[in-house]
View 1: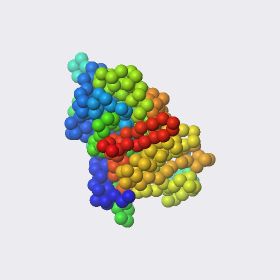
View 2: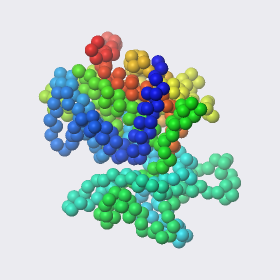
View 3: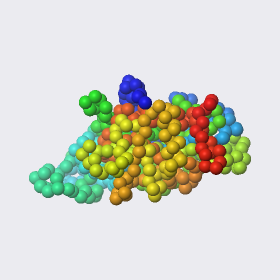
View 4: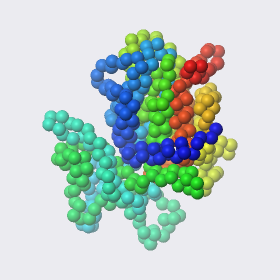
Length: 446
Ligand code: ZN
């Protein structure tokens, strides 16, 4: 189960390029759509009638921040093979009326938290803003992506001399500690001007914005043997990227391959475009009806479907080894993590774990397991919420990483390529439940 190092390295570099192009969920969806366009996929719109053809490849977005793409083999498909992940990451959102004067000498920006981040690593590093604008164009409002592509902001730490106890532990107050410095007194009134200029629009035409801070530090491959990789947004764009690659390479003559990337996982998925919305179900139902199939055929297809909820997991931390469960100990470069939770915060059960293990073996890639210590609550993800809308056999997996929810996270160089291969294997397989508790993973053509 060894993947060639050159393959791992080239995929890791491609991943860093993808991450750097995707500073916000809107940019991530655009990056994915660009890959799909390049691969010949046709864009569909939810507000228009869908005309699908046998063998066609399509994608549809919702809110510009979630995207579902799919390949339809033909009318007589047996089920859906689904891989889901999320497009959003914790960050600081720029508030309305963001400029704040300080001491007649500075302009800083008013921000609020999006999701649950580690605050400390946002300090003392070059930051900028990116996101989406709602811009007046004649009698319409158009949405535009914007990324201010230069070092624009910084959140400077308070010197140790003003708080000698800071290293004993510090409680960050987002309204006081986390406001980024934007400029000197002369910068007053120019922030939205700067944003408008980057987007190529007029400041007075910007009627709305969803702007977030992003970390400017470029991605890096590092370590004694170049075995580690660090960048922003690994959670969860590392899963979105690798499953996308596997999705583009794979395909099945009798299953609809579905790649879904949802926004708002970090705040509970309960938005119109989140995993707990109707987005995925709407798409699957529309595929079914556009192919001229009955409601009954939809339900039999759902029953023969398999879903992967892909969201990064925690590797054992070298300095905090006792934070990890005593017997399930995932490591960077140790392969894809299968995530278990008795309370079903992760959807994995004995059957779906077994299917994933078999799939990993077919793809010749490593897997490992993650569970929280019994005395720790841990996080949750999108699989169980998506299951509220489309209930299918599901397994929660992810790639092992450190520093989750930091603006600069760390992963293993080998693991991305492992998920590319496992995803391809998934999209080339189907799952058959032959009744009486027996399941079969069938590789296409076998
Ligand atoms: Zn995540």
